[in-house]
Length: 178
Image (cartoon, rainbow, N blue to C red; front, top):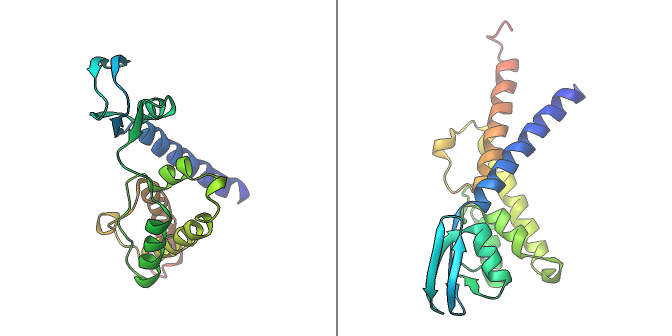
C-alpha cells in the first residue's frame, strides 16, 4: 500500500516539474531599462534596443535581463493589496475559483520571499481556499473542461485528484463485480 501511494506522489511531483519547465520556457514581456547595443539570444540576436522598448522573451531570459538590471517585468507580481482582494473574492465566492495568471504559484514562489512575511499568511489562506474548492470539484467528478480558472499547477492537481476519485467510485460501485 505505502509503495503504491508513494508511486502516485512521485508521478504527481514529476507532472509538477513538467509544469515548472513549461513555465521557465514560456514567454514573458519585459520593458528595457537601458539601451543595449546587442543582445544575443538562442533564437538569434537583437541590436540597438532602446530603453523603454518591450521585448517578448523566454521567462528564463527575462529573469537574466532583470537580474542584470537591464529590464523590468511588464506583468507585475501581485502586491499586498491585490493579494488581499483575491483572498476576499476567494472567501466570498465559496464555489467559484477566481481567475489567476496561468503560472500563479510559480510566479509567487519566485517573487515572494521571507522579506514579504506580511503577505505569506494571506497567500496560505488563498491556497487553502482554492485547494478546498478543487477537491470539492474533483469529488463531484466535474470534467476538467468544465472547470474554469485553474492555473497550470492546479490543473495537474485536479487531474490527479479526478483519477483517484474515479478509481474510488469504481471500487465502491455496488454494480461492479471487480
